[in-house]
Length: 294
Image (cartoon, rainbow, N blue to C red):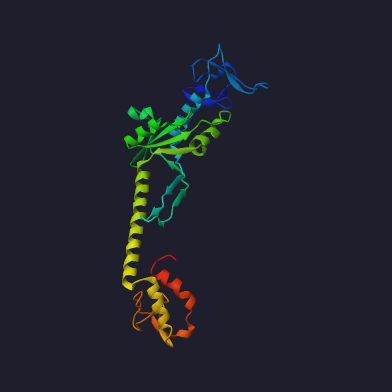
């Protein structure tokens, strides 16, 4: 047994505050019985032992209590990194309009204004209630398995932000300073429920669909105005039969007007020799201008 309670606080056998022998004044985190601090033990190493008898000691109980005390005392916790997949936007004919987008963003530690023990219905699925600015979120400290679907559904139904910190593999043999760092920053964590994040994802998906819809509408209007991409190419090749042509400095296409571009309306039009025009580049320039894939 490496961890025990001293005046209500979780301590490690190697903590300086723990005196050797019966003078340690420590009790078992499981059964509450008095303990003796066995220090300078060569065979079994430093550890706590019951002064009388024993119990079915479970280190997860001490880890769970320590984690609550660590976060409440430091008022600091690292939030889960943002990992979201925004789905591709596909047309009715199966054409990908906007590709799938993976959003990966590392989120650092934040300072919490207040930390308290979760109460009421939230206590069924969470251990701590945290307030940061005007926002409230809850933390579940998982020492014996992650939250099942039923608990996640409760969080979503109540529209609360619930973060779960996975402590099932917490290093029980390390000192309390290292364990505190593990709890606050290093242990795996995830959002079981995050209404703000759900709304952000929903808005992102909506914006991507709206942008693709606007893109399609612009394409339809352009194609409607010029007839078709092939018609534009035919017209460009016809202009090249002339010795001199009007070329737009903005989109690089040939214009029927010398005052403004008949494709992008730019006034940057100059008269050039048709022999200097690269015919091979015209199809690409046309597709770029009218936003149509090859």
